[in-house]
Length: 257
Image (cartoon, rainbow, N blue to C red; front, side, top):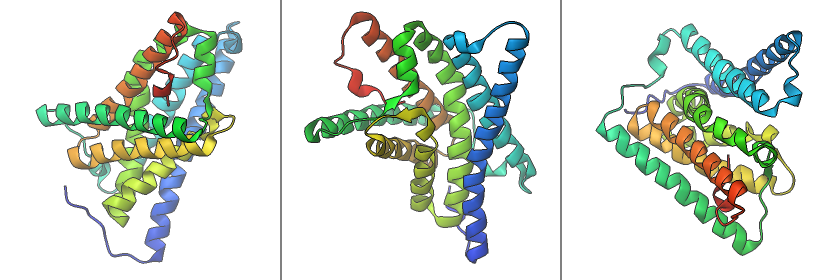
């Protein structure tokens, strides 16, 4: 699909930039609000989610990536004059499945390369909250496998690729669209990270996001990056589960959620 970049003035550019920043923020706010309401509801029935980390994560993923991101994305699309015309989606065909396989291989290839560079130059990675929780409750990781495929991948890609990247791409062109959307995607994960190596991990997110952005741009189907993203996270959770339950640490370098 050819770029629909338009010649526009500063106000149009500013409007696009403010929109692509506001939409993820709105998704997080709506998801957080829904999470708070869910916690209050569970508490009313005598269930403390803070004492049940597995259930807490499930509720968090459903309310944030599922309902929060999904509802904000769909609401925004419904307010546009072209309706859902911004979103490029189709039933996957053979070409799409080839893109999914290539994208998944590219993500793990990039992750291995980043791991080699970090080891070579002694660069640390930030800690991810899910890894910490998974270390304490390995069974939680198995629950996150289907959630990654069904909610995390589709929810995040619908928001960050289907809307944020597409808006930027239509206004600024393909390269700036993918690049800027990848930076926004990376920054959106800051709240999940802690410890040293934050910058290095955010750069890694940018690299991985670019691969997802390219898969969407050239496949022309939002289902492609959604499946790639979901499977990528799911495989990592399985790797972490295997690592924790067998004591093998050789594959920890493949973990960047």
